[in-house]
Image (cartoon, rainbow, N blue to C red; front, side, top):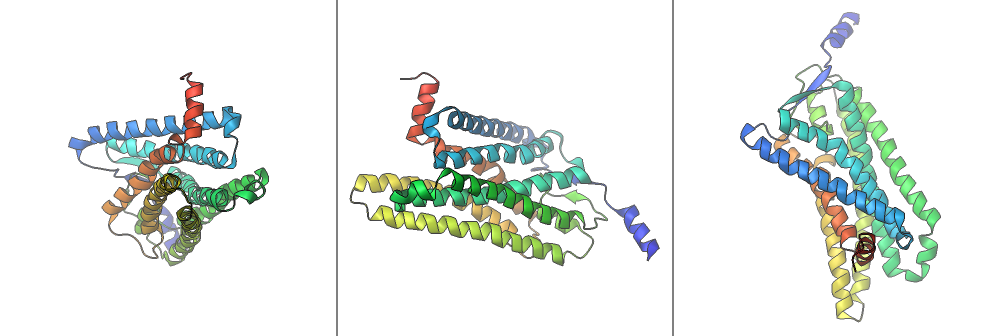
Length: 312
């Protein structure tokens, strides 16, 4: 028994090799330029939104409070995954230590779980504003908004602690090649040389609770909003409200569809190329779309932005 444990310790993987988004050298330079541009635009968009919300009292409302949280999260989110994606495109497959890999996984899980809860909170905020406007000041008072935001971040932290601890405690005896551009759950489970049933169960249950629970809240909220909007007498108001709701639903749908396909599965994912494509959707596409959909199309934000840059 002691000898087997010693052998296990000797063969334990100390680092992983990330293959990156693409191994084709002929397109890596172009992809690097594209994703670097997307990364910088995402940081710029969300930094502008945070500044506008913080510096203008007319945006000190529940909706913008959640948008500020979402923008802060998106900046952290892309800063966790995009540097490793860019590194892989710049240098090709590269080595990452076991500790660094688990650290990246920890922050990634924290942020993706928090984003799900924040999106649900924002959907609930819009539901109260449109369907129960008289009760809005009471139901979305500052204490409630703060509690929802804190609960979102703490919930993501707790889920990440549980999932990362389970994955880090597995044995990795080799091979150590991850066909992904960052340390993700499924590729790591595929490399484990020990029984992963318990870890997969924890991953599956937490995914069901976080993803499906928050998705249900978001869909219920937007469905109620749709019914309320449909009953409005003015066709112009209905078109405007439906346009806004449809935009929100598109972003929420893309994010949840990609994330649910990967994480709400009890078995390991074998099609890792598809996994990488879907990962790009919710780690790159939605962070750059969220500010445009939720904020930069908003008239109040436009007015504040024009005032800030001194436009008439």
